[in-house]
Image 1: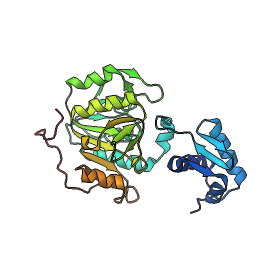
Image 2 (image 1 turned 90 degrees about the vertical axis):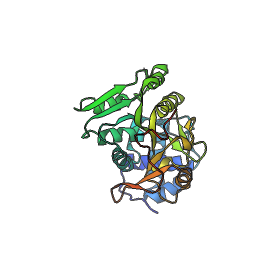
Image 3 (image 1 turned 45 degrees about the vertical axis):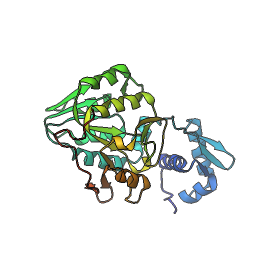
Image 4 (image 1 turned 180 degrees about the vertical axis):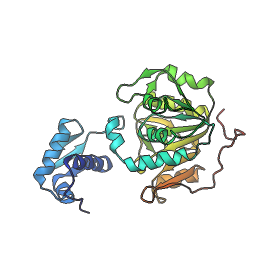
Length: 285
């Protein structure tokens, strides 16, 4: 399928990186055909991306330099699947009851959840994200608790022993966990082991654990394992019903909350998995 030739250079380059993420390599000829531009134009795009360290040019095309431990910059991730992340954030916000205490993770989708909660009253939000804290810190009737810890430059997440230990004395109703990838095995994964350890600590302090993941993250495995799919109670995603990872998660007893970005449907539960109630059934030890 040909992509409109009216795309701006930045849009073409973003699409090139998306295709590399999915396939690992691309050729000048196929890119030119897809974009409806000359091979010289896509060569210039590839050269620009190569200078930024985002890919490596090879004879006739380009290959990905992304490894399982390479974390794309926050701004790049924020621009990727933006509409889906907004919809997932809104659907996740619909799972929150007034008066809840919740953990909101770091990352781009978690930040959209925080934005969707700004009008909600009487919430307590625990977070290891400075971005989430800034987003909600000035909102009346939302109490924000930062974990403490060492700040990761660029990501603005809090990591280390202080961040992990914060959860030893906390009890949350909900933990919303952002991921780099989620697969049937090994489960939810992330780029950075330090962030993954904080996520695991948050999971242990919550009655109900919910993964936030747009469709591009399903079936992907990255460097640091957060936990097996059975550690989670729900998955909020825009992935199609036929997705193999989504089916495996549902078979494991994970509730699927699916958003339809095109129809702007906030949340459509697709399994009969019972929710975790106030009695604490299913709570972490």
